Image (cartoon, rainbow, N blue to C red; front, side, top):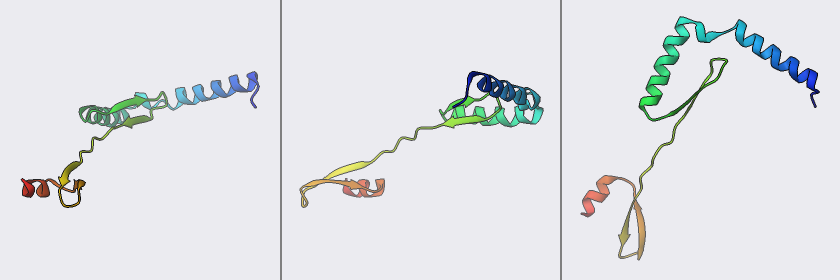
Length: 89
């Protein structure tokens, strides 16, 4: 377990590394990250940008399943695609 002094030194050294290697000020990083963030927001994703420049993109995807009643089997069956759904109609 870290004592308080070691923990303070660890935090201080990490903050110095971020200051010395600040990618957030690099033009190429700004262009690339801006494009990624804009594209992700347009898709409805959640974005988190960490002080060291890392970007976390979180997405949720909706999946739709179609079920229809099968009289012969006496139960609901999942249809694999809409083509089957249209043929049934």
